[in-house]
Image (tube, rainbow, N blue to C red; front, side, top):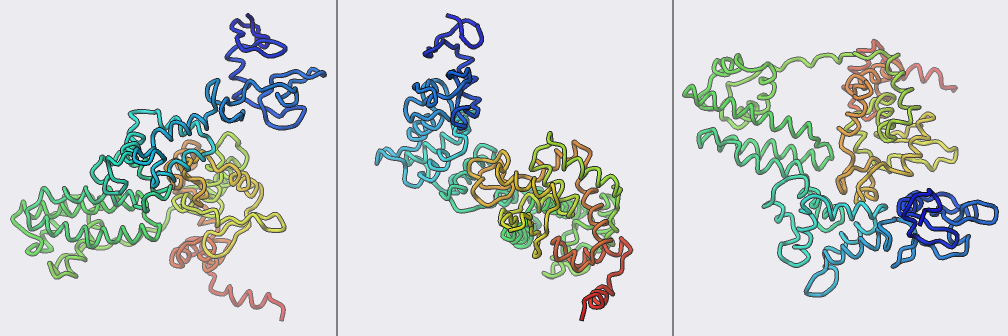
Length: 483
């Protein structure tokens, strides 16, 4: 039989007025539209007296698109049951505790999180994809074969599949929060001192654990630990091992090394090595291991402005009006170009930093202490983003991130936005410096620091670079205020 819609063969699905083929059925099911009869978004397949195509309810017929189990038409998945019912069945089989015959009590939040996602098809895909490492571990936890704890993951590879499941368990509240960057650091430290003598290896371990790791933990608690900070800490420790290895090769130890030894070592190293060793040598002096070793601290160079203000505004216009760019990338780029926000801080923003309840319809964003009104059409873009929130993980949307990421419970990674901006010729480092330079010429440094969240020292340096002296600002304001 031929299909009454496309004329092709295979019209195996029967409607009161015609037969349709499988591809046409799927096309109507997966692409619902507003029904002319009731204005609801439904699969449309039945003609009315006026020749319009309407939904099953308006036509007075049973829906061929309805799930055989729940009767709903949304979330299509195959021909019989919808994606949510399919996911419910598979999760039940996966997470059932044999001892009780019900969903494992501790894993119930995982069941609810996966089943409650906006797209159950995503959950089905995760259960089926790859080697199914995550689902397999969940099943073992449900059967009591492995413990539901962070210790279980300590003995497993720290790859994407295992980390994803661990993050899912944290996001669902099954496990307490943890910091993945620190988790990677600890096993790495075990092998850090292997090239060294036992004495130097012990010193490196003490410095790494009691100074470097403590600083990283403090930054993690403050929410300022980033991948860049983590990589810099590892690089610093590698430089320490390099110095101690050189000293051993020249029959020296940290305690017996002289300033001349240090200068000889640095002469064969890149210029950056000296600054990377500064903290370690400070620790050596403070602990009395060696009070003679010092490195010259280079003066901090003045920021370089490599983007003109005209180019900055051209990029602003592109992000405001180019609908081909992802919405969250447009907003992130605009917050950087207009308000000099670092991408790492933008990606960590919370929804409570945005206020859309203003009676006047203004969108207010707080970067530090003072709410700032978003100019239009940026305000409208922020409004639209709050409604859709990007392609977030099913376990990331409800946790307060303004830019939820694909990893359960975590915000969008900086590189996601950075790479898209760079692909369009917008270099974040140059763009933020251009914004800071322009704002410093327009706004007193004390207000700039308060509103943008930068330090007073940084704001003062940018004001000096912009050749603006705001020392008389308070007096000027006092004269402008009527008495």
